[in-house]
Length: 95
Image 1 (cartoon, one colour):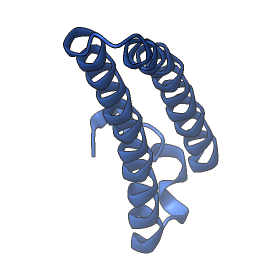
Image 2: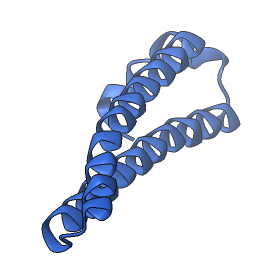
Image 3: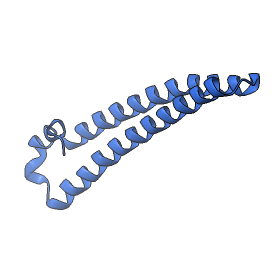
Image 4: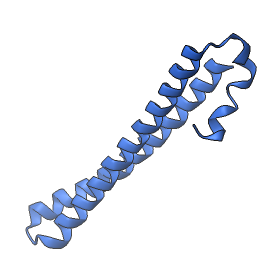
């Protein structure tokens, strides 16, 4: 676990047992995995879109490539917003 996630444990430590720590750690790690899935989708859409635009000269394929590139940015923004919201909720629950 990263040090930045440890600050949430301090005030609630006395009432937590090992099972609670492990469940909390699993939830924190699941949140990080979800963010990485958003990043993976973002990179895939960008790479696919650029590949379509640069390699194929067909107008329809170019348009789809530009749509992929345009769709990638709202996806990564949504992923970051969800990650931060969930992290904030976890810290509120922990305290």
